[in-house]
Length: 365
Image (cartoon, rainbow, N blue to C red; front, side, top):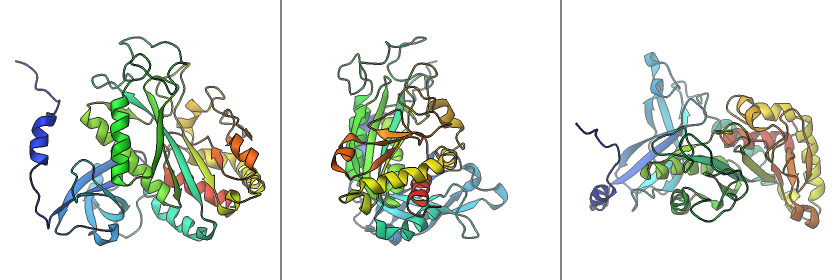
C-alpha cells in the first residue's frame, strides 16, 4: 500500500477559496504567543461584520493546557485582540489579529510580555522611541527538518562567502518563500522594510520598521506567523534557532535598531553615546533578556566570531559588526540617527527586547 501523501493540493484548495463569501461574514484568525515564549498559535472565528480595529473584536479563549499556559483543571485562557491585519491567505475582508493572552484572574500569562512593554512605551511616548529589527532565520528541508534547505544529504555546502546577498541556484535556496513572505507582509499591513540572503546558505533576513513603541513587537510577531504560514504552503520548515548548525557557520540574530527623537535630531550622536554607556553598565541584564532561555541560546551564537561580540564582554564601535552595539558609519558622519544592538537572538521576544532597551536608555533603570 502506498503511503498517504501529506502534501496539500493548491489547485483544489484554490477552488474553495474562490467561492463567494457572505458580505456580513468575516473570518478572523486570532494569533497569539504560546507558553514557549517563541512560537505562535492561531485559530479562526467568524464574526458578522467587517472589523476596522482590533478593539471591535470579541474577546475569545483557548485551551491553555495544550499550549503550556494553564493547568487542565483551569485551562481557559482569554485572547484579547490588540492589533488588526489583513489576511493574505483568505483575502477579501478577512483579517488576522494579534492577541494578548490573559488568565482567569485578568492578569497576563507569563508569556504575555506585550502587557508590560506597552506600559513602558506609554511612559516614554514623548521621546518617540523608534525600533527596527533585522530578523534572521533559516529555511529547513521539506523532508528532513534537521537539514537546511538545499544542503547536500549527509554533507555540507561550500564554505561561506558567496551566499550573502547572493544570486543563482547554486548560491540561494528558498527565494520563492522569501518573496511570497515579503508580499504577504505588505498585504497584511506589517511594516516590512526589506530582505536579503544571509551569510550561511539557506539563511535569510528581513527587516521590520521603523515602528514606534509597542508596534515593533506586534509587527515582528505577526511577520513571524506569516513566515511560518507561507513556508507551510511550500512544505518548507522555518527555524529561528540562533545557531542552527554548529561549527564554522554564522548564527542568526535579531539586530535591533533604536532611536529617540533626541537621537534623530542634529547633535543626536551625543545622546546615542550616552545611551550606549547605560547599555554597557547593564550588559548582563540585557543578555539575560535577549533570548527565551536567559542567555543560554545566545551563548551558542555570541562567541566573538562570525560577526558577533563575545557574550561575556561589552564593546561598541562605529561600523564594527563584531561589537555588542554598532554605530552605523553614516550616523557617525551625520552626527545623529540611531544605534544597532547586535546582541538579541533570532528567537528573542521583541516585546522583551524593546522594553529592556527603553528601560535602560530612556528611564535609566
